[in-house]
Length: 175
Image (cartoon, rainbow, N blue to C red; front, side):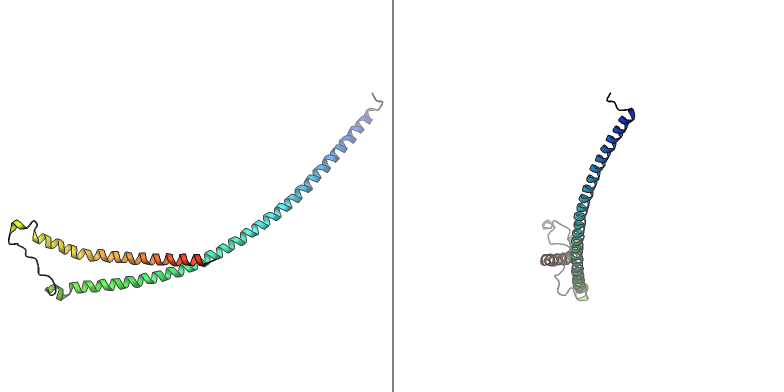
């Protein structure tokens, strides 16, 4: 063909292959260097992000801890107020029961006279007077218990509203 021996052609092929591999190696080395530079830049941005996020998290944790401390103080105040109000209510209702059940009340002083068990005319009565008196007795003993439970619920509700208001004011004033 061109007058080169077979080994010459093999040598030229090997030289072209080596040159091609050298160029490919140079291109890949350049790409690797660029990739390393981009990785370092991204890692720097990531480290900055992590540091900012950690600082923000620590700041929020400190705020939450302060809010929890304030909340605990308000809860203790509310619990003390509820305990005081409940003890006052208990004492007031104990006095009420004592007065109601005292000897003076049971002897009839200061009370309305008992209703007659028999009326003058059965035609004018539409109920049994004895059963009515029993029902009124049940009502008179049950109503104070209902009122006492309602007063206890009002004390609890007022304490919760006061606590919530204090928390709202504290959180609105904090930065």
